[in-house]
Image: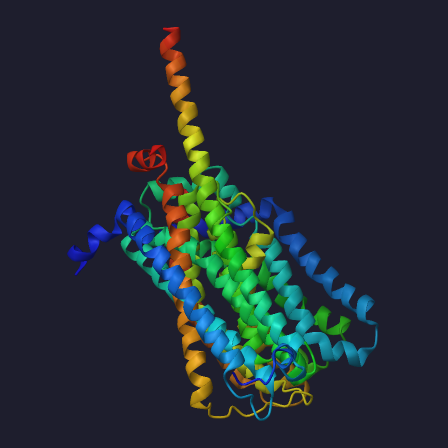
Length: 244
Length: 221
Length: 66
């Protein structure tokens, strides 16, 4: 399998592949997001308990799911980067981190905007919101570390190592926050039970999740191309490409 | 392990010569602790209620303060580079760093805990819990800060970056340590929290030295 | 269409502010990230070609001086 995969780890090949996939991924991502969100916003009945405010679910849940999915993608890339010293994998860690940070920020902001009408405050120290906030800190740490070195390559390697350390710690952090939350359960928060979701609401949600996933891939392609150029700028193929 | 004792001796000698490196964080710990009553008011009940959080946040900040310079001098004068280039196993160097870092920043906090108990009007049951959590928690704190210091050895911007890296990883320790102290204050058993802290410490002891070694290597190459 | 009229759609049953706020911020953040990534790519290519052109000019000048 590695013999078959190895030519694809060549930066030039990855650059061209990403360039070929990017427009299609971007277009289909935007189209899927429009489809899922318009369907969810306009063509589904409101929730019997939460009214129309529940429609925030169509971006809150996809961004929350994909903020964790993006972290695992970054951690897998980091693991490959550390074990097999694949350069493209190192650069993709630095390319993925800002996307994950933006997704996490979206999940936090929409969670707050949903919490205001439901809980009455913008922020509660709810287990999921707190975990998401810590995830944002982890992403910011990776971004800050990758940019802190004068040598770009060292930054990418250090960020990979931090991403792997973070993914080992993530379950510990998650469960400790959950445990802490059950310990300090405030009386003011009334947790509404998770109802089984109606299929008419489920389809647009699934489409939106897919849209966030495809958009993530598109953005990774775009950002990885820049990272490849930056790291390979002294190679002949980059010079030929720029002088075209 | 001849090398380990050599490295430990070297670290201890360095610490004995640069007293500010380990005295300043300890002073900082005491100052932060004495600032809290000034900020929130000297009400003993309030202070006792907030003591677990205050103690552990102050401990983290003071250990962070000490961590920044941990590898900087060795990196600047080429010790780390020579060790990597000589293909010496870095493990004994890292273990010596960890041990002396705990000795110089963690242990003083444990020794200072009676004073802390007096300042924050903590009763004796809580004091025992605080002592136990500090004993179990400060080595973990040292491990985390050594890892952060190793990752940022050759970075241009230290300081804030180190805090950003370590703080999220430190959250489980903060949660369990302060909850053990709270449980002690309410007269509840807190063996569970201590057991989890011990588990985290052992887990970190097994993995973090490896991470430190690879972090040092990638900073040199 | 579930809603009766456009005004009802914008009002979102009284939750309009929160719904449109979160959707608006989401689209804005995604758009900013995409635009910034595009800008970074273009900017780097421009800088690199400028640097290569400068190196080319220096080389030409040195040959002339000889």
